[in-house]
Length: 291
Image (cartoon, rainbow, N blue to C red):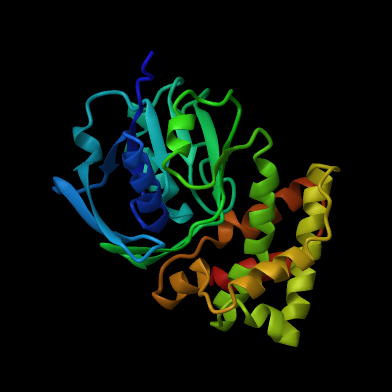
């Protein structure tokens, strides 16, 4: 029996949205970008890890001309723009819609979707750089997908075209590991306008990294006692492995864009407030990056 493949609507056709669209198209899924304006299609160039470049042509629909219900939605928009993106299409979503959240941080879709909507979390350690219409995959690592449902029928076919895509029942484990790395590397490199490796090499930044990381581990252990903590070594290993890279938050700050600090360190501060825990270093860095 042939599995009917989903037709995905995509909000956020930036670096990671383009990566996801490419793999979905290769697996035979349809992808339509939701974008305000009059565009009929979106043409993009994607450079693959082997150096080969390919062109993607994605159909585009403005939110106000979508007449049918949205059954499958991929959200890859930067977290500060989540509310605007979802509010434009909320009346097309329903309780049986399946939403994949392919964003940094946590909490960006809280309260924005219809009650009962199923959300799958996508967590990726792949790296894509560039600005529309040119994107380059600089590292194709593991991507985890998981959430409150059984493994979907279409996933096996997608895994044949999406390298290192894994179904993860306990998706918050890789999600939290990435969160802690982002809590440390993103704001420090953005504030000081340095590449990732400076978090390891600069003694002052390394000390700040230890303080941010310790607070993050304490909050996550309070939320889930099975969280192992002691994350600093793995965070520094990520910074060392990506020493020459520019973090997404640094890149946003360089071009004057709103950063994702509220969905990263800000999410941690919100959890700490609910738990009655003090996280002064994370609170301070949120304030510094939201001035």
